[in-house]
Length: 200
Image (cartoon, rainbow, N blue to C red):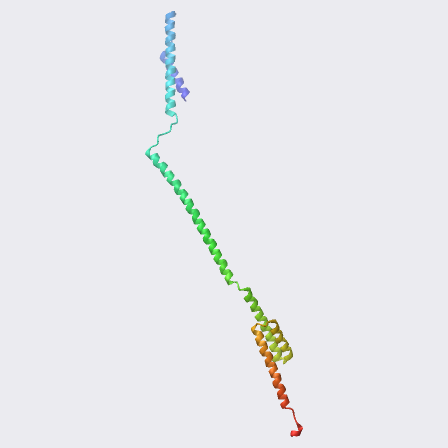
């Protein structure tokens, strides 16, 4: 584009200079004419050079001077960056707090589950108690329903041996005393009821 303008300027300069007129050749006229042509060419080149310089100044990139609006925009941009940094820090803090709350909830749930689990010792004690009761029930059945007192006493003794501190061991001791008392009473009654023919 600039080359075209330069060419146009040179063409215009040539048109301004015009065609040389036929003259008789004389050395002084020839010198004058050569000087004139040199001057015209130099003037044209100088004009083109000035035009090119003006164009390069006009379209050259330049750093605009900062206006108050530019300073305000720069200040706002700095404030926005600071606010973004604060917002990121706040979001990180919120995430940490939420994570701590989630951990605390999980810990509370686990503690509640742990509290609901029965103590193994209590569970074992309940099983022991249940087993002793079953043996008492079986011994009572032998004693009261089947009248097998010796077998019943064997079961009661077994309960006392296996579970000496259990409450059913105390029940077994009472049952043994009851059986022995019955046997004693029965023996004494039988001794009194012996028939004596001389008494008739």
